[in-house]
Amino acid sequence: MGRIRILSDIVANKIAAGEVVERPASVVKELLENSLDAGATLISVETDGGGRRLIRIADNGCGMMRDDAMLAFERHATSKLSSVDQLEAIATLGFRGEALPSIASVSRLQLETRSATETTGARVAIAGGKLLACEEIPLAPGTTISVSDLFYNVPARKKFLRSEQTELAHIASLVTHYSLAHPDKSFELTHSKKELLRVTPVTTDRDRVFQVFGASVLEDLVEIGTRSVQNGRFRLSGFVSRPQVQKSNRNSIFLFVNRRLIRDRLLLHAISAAYHNLIPPACYPFALLFIDCDPAEVDVNVHPSKTEVRFRNGSFVHDFVRDAIRDTIIEQRPVPSAPPPGTPLAQPGAHLPYSEFSQAIENFRFDEARPVIPVPLEGSAPLPEYTLRPAQPPPARFDFGAAPPIELETQPSAAEPLRLKIPDTHGGFPEGVDLNAPQGMVSLDDLRVLGQIHDSFIIAAGRDGLWIIDQHVAHERILFEKVLAQQAAGRVEQQRLLMPMVLPLTPAQQVEYDRIAEELERAGFETEPFGNRTIAIKAAPSDLAPGDLERAIYEILEIAEGEMRKTQVEDFRRGIAASLACRAAIKINTRLDQAKMDYLLRELSRTRCPMSCPHGRPVALRYTTREILRSFHRI
Ligand code: ADP
Ligand code: MG
Image 1 (tube, protein in one colour):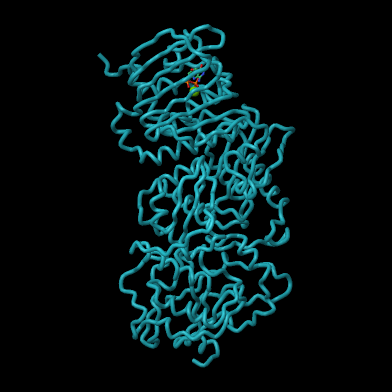
Image 2 (tube, protein in one colour):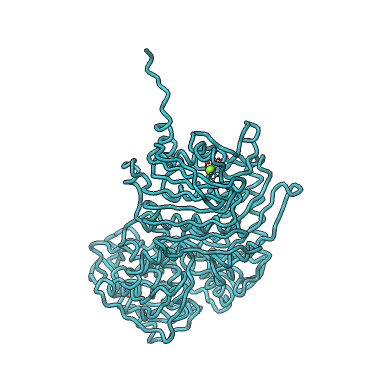
């Protein structure tokens, strides 16, 4: 007898579940898509235990005929596809007939459904793929599916699940996504009876964006008026952020093809290409894009969870999307503080807001910049171009991004007793860095301030040469260490706000907030939930100006989101400290008096890692006496 056997349906479904049902959010995705395919206009999602304990989705869609209720759990049972031809042009979100049997094989599932064309409905209960009950019951039209104890019979899968909050964050982000794609429908999401999202039907995408994200996010976005090519065969609409919005991860990019949520590298690349040179390379914009096309132009049958698509003509779609976004952003300028259109844009440093940089471009008076330092200095890297750029014409570039950091760490040699050892540029506290060591190291505390250029950089003379210190970055380093030290000691200086500040949160931010509320408190914030997806801030770390508060909180929530997969609380705390330091630090283009500059250098010399900011950018450039002598041909 041969050894090959056909797997039983129960086993086959469990295997398929491995592909379709990765985590609670995948269940929500499949069930939501079914509700949308059923034409529902009212969809409510109830969850508990991060979706592991319960996911219940109720809709007012077409419902199932009583005879179909059981059939829906057969493998490859679908009402949406009957021939191969149709697979070429799928208009529904589902089509494989795999989701319900797969989910039912790894959970306890109950289906209650009634078709509007019948007078009674059906209830089906299944656990681990085994049918427990099937009965006729009176019901209102529509469908409710409850999935409890997900993965109860797949311990291996259960182990891989993240914390309740993380799984919930995925669910929240998913429901948010779908609500954005269907502004004409009602969506509701609750967790342990607490409401995370509730949106009622509106007529435009803009209104839905407003409902979900609030007015301040909307202000930073530009709407892409519907653009179409090839006689309307491809259409693009949606929203993209202005260049001053810089996210540290891709969580704010929402892509839909024919209103189906997808993740697509091609489109992600098109977005990055559109923002090339408008925002720093390591940053991402907010984007909510709807591509609509003939279903025959796109193959959705590429990935088990249908999140990947393949366009028939990928490079065409790529260029279309890139150009449409780019044109939209360019048309929408000038943003209040951005340089005029056509100006080659700077690549600001990764953590400095774009607006600050564009301000710098505008305020920068090149004619005041006397080229005091000859370039190129032999044996050193070329100087960044902004130190020597002539005034005219045109004063357009202030290009931090392109300026290679001066290599400060040179080879040790006996001829040069004074040598600076550069610590870890990522802000670590490396062992053995003693800046006060008399021999072999340079001490920062005998620097003498000579002055300030461009209201941004401090020029100082030291025993070993000439120093240029970036005042913002220097202050950032000082504050970063101060914040970390205060937090570690549990004594963060706090200031009470005269009036509590009320901030609206997105569902995903609300989930993150619940998760990190304690960390916020530890960092010196006093916050409390304030009704529906809003929080009130009552006190904040004292270094932070009230005007920077809102940005800081949103930034911290974004860091938390980015760390969704990581559990390193230390990294997160450093992230908070870095963000607070950056917000509170003296900005560039700020005139400083002598006392302030002295203070900055003194404090900087006391930090443990004075040569780089918490984000890894250099704090100071140094031209050694030896380099200066060499440039004057004196040695
Ligand atoms: P698919 O969506 O790929 O067809 P599913 O396993 O997700 O496969 O669902 C099987 C079938 O069950 C669907 O084709 C549809 O007929 C029916 N169905 C599932 N969910 C609903 C719902 N919420 N309302 C009406 N019918 C549904
Ligand atoms: Mg389906």
